[in-house]
Amino acid sequence: MTFRLGLIVAALILVADQVSKYLLLDLMQQNPNGIVLTPFFNLVLVWNTGVSFGLFQEDTPLRSWTLIGVAAAVLVWLLVWLWRAQGWLIGAALGLIIGGAIGNIIDRYRFGAVFDFLDFHAFGWHWPAFNVADSAIVVGVGLLLLDSIRMRPAAD
Image (cartoon, rainbow, N blue to C red; front, side, top):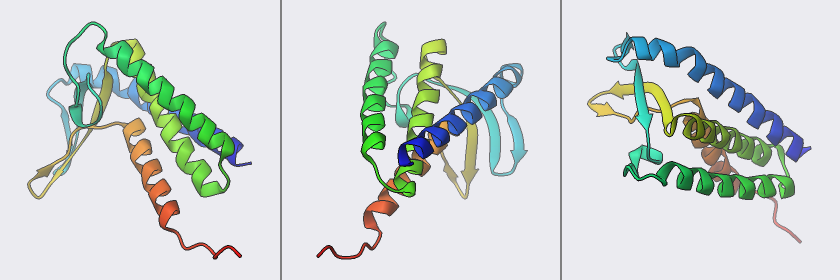
């Protein structure tokens, strides 16, 4: 049951991520300076050639393939973890991370970089642009942390 839940969540996230990128990529290419939606939220066009927060953006011929390989290895590890996991919270959390990881792997394969478009800023803070896949990964990690600190009955 946990494995199936994780796969369903991963599939939903993957679809949401790829559909949002499909719908927004052309729009953002037509508006390269971004689209202001609220005083704290814009849509932008950012190509993240590195990993989280723009790390490892060096332009080398093997960079994208190396990052795809590392992400694929982590993905396999996450699928094994999901296969062995018990409980709906862990299943949902791993599904969020897996779906997000696959979404970003697809971008890296198709474009050589990840398409980020959500841009939040408030009170002098400006977060790096991100996408649906990134959001799912962050929420999934948060749920794993929540599960790790949950009170459990003591074992006899």
